[in-house]
Image (tube, rainbow, N blue to C red; front, side, top):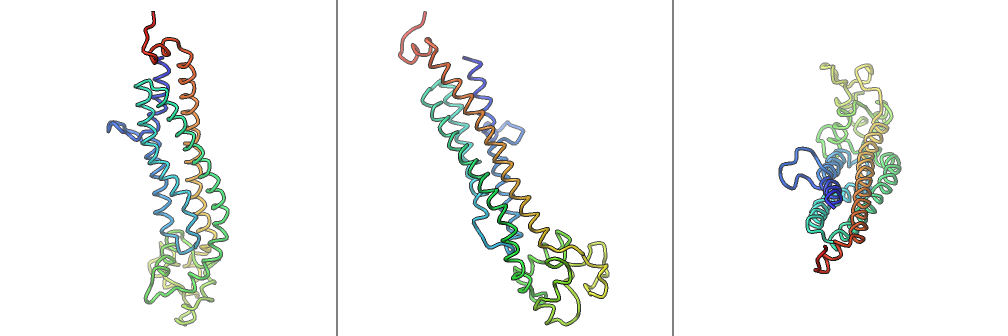
Length: 258
């Protein structure tokens, strides 16, 4: 029985995020919350390039699951220490619900990952047409940030800027300075010197970046779904063995075992 309790406590401990304050590593709850928060922060830099707010649903769910893992770990540990069949059964049911939730996150992650390309393609032209280099608004700052961060220029290449309202109004035959290669300090963005500009377009790179972020959510959900499955199996084994243990039955009934 000691081995059974130890087995369950080990798996339960994986679900706790240093609840005693002495744990050194990052555990499941902390990692899931970190992944969800990372998705929110990163998507905030690219939110002008997609309009579907539901894309963030997997991140919301994974943060909720991470928070719930604190409670699950406490229930599992308490149930094991007190040798409560009811507590262990509750532990298994909650683990099952979390497992199902993580499977839903994986499915939603794949669905929204497939939609990213269409979302970006639908929105990026609108954002570029709203660019204002003189009095930059949020959309303009987002474009400059993306072009510097991803080292790209324009939608497909720097020539896309020629079709924007900003380019036609400025009439100086140049693109924003954010298109200039980082190593060049004397770049003015002039189209007469294309070798000074990033040659790759931003659309493909934004899509790639957002899909990578969504994959973090998918892999995190898959990894911890596997952990939840192991936790359920271990708890079920403990429950089954205890239900067949005559000493445990007498203990529950308040009797003695010779």
